[in-house]
Length: 170
Image (cartoon, rainbow, N blue to C red; front, side, top):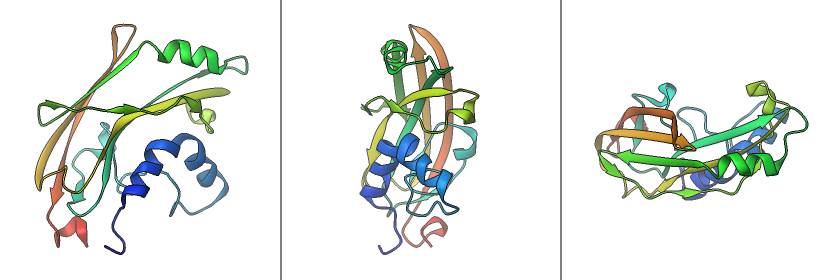
């Protein structure tokens, strides 16, 4: 398992993508080792088009997750973010079964310009998945996010877990 994605890799993506991950990416030309989750790296599975259809390795750890980023101009505060985020509910289903998830603490997002903001905060919600948690084969992941009872995101992807020795494991 020398180059396999390990538990620490996916935990870093889950906990540090929006602050430590962006700090590394903004100040380095290499993403290797950064808690970033570009498609196909570091084990992230997000319910968005770039992740749809991806092949994953059964030997790797993964994290199913979504981030919420709230922000505004320089007057936007952590208190403002917490007020908005307290109304948000996230539900993941994997192959029709509801996943139990965890939510990270609310943290400053270190690349607010990416979304046209001056100040931003984020949390991620998701679940770290061991190699035993995802069976070999095709899977359907759906995610619904509501804010104050209003659906703000409803989407899904399909992905395939390849067996040891399969294409995604080479």
